[in-house]
Length: 292
Image (cartoon, rainbow, N blue to C red; front, side):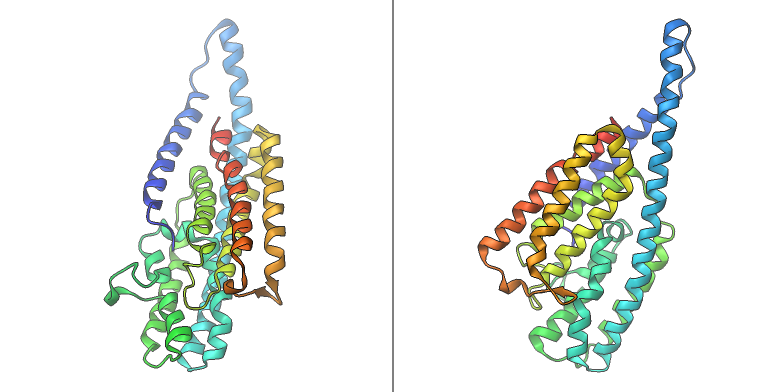
């Protein structure tokens, strides 16, 4: 679940988006005369390709989100069926992989109302009588070790996931949202995944960790042409940091997933945290560079 200060972050970046749109509008002002006319005539020629690049980035990311939610519905369906069948071992094996689709696009889900608390609230995040979603079933599977009486929770989870799939068709995405989303995903890693707080019963935090990073990388990939066009050195640094973070995760990959978070030593989690921080710093500059 995203950290509680995310709403203020959204507001800040959305304001940034408004400023960005205003800046773009200046380039289409009426032409001046003389030498000033030559200067203003040159700006639209540069601004139009930049706008096209960002429009293409937004459309590519929209298709990515739709693809992830399509897979999320299938994965949640299989997971909830196992829960309702009382097949605890199968449900455990499907739990973390199915959540990864959500973790990759969590900022989009957060922008669509209450889907984040419905699907991803941890115990204590919401009143007990409102707690539902993945982490309630996580507690049943790993802590209580019984899914008796969890049919309604499973049904509600699948319904929420399907409703999210419907909603993403109409979500409004802009460049500021993409930049904010990439940074928020890394903040999410630092605040709850690398600390082991997110998956307190299953200890599958590294799945969420990897999915958040993959989601941030996807956003960077669609914005990469715009970043390279404005600041090739920054683009190179971000590329390097993503590779370093991927290498830092490599020792903890096992079969098609990840080892339990409890297998990591404090020194190993510290190195992962440092790799996240090293990426977050240059990644946070994307918005300024693209808008500058």
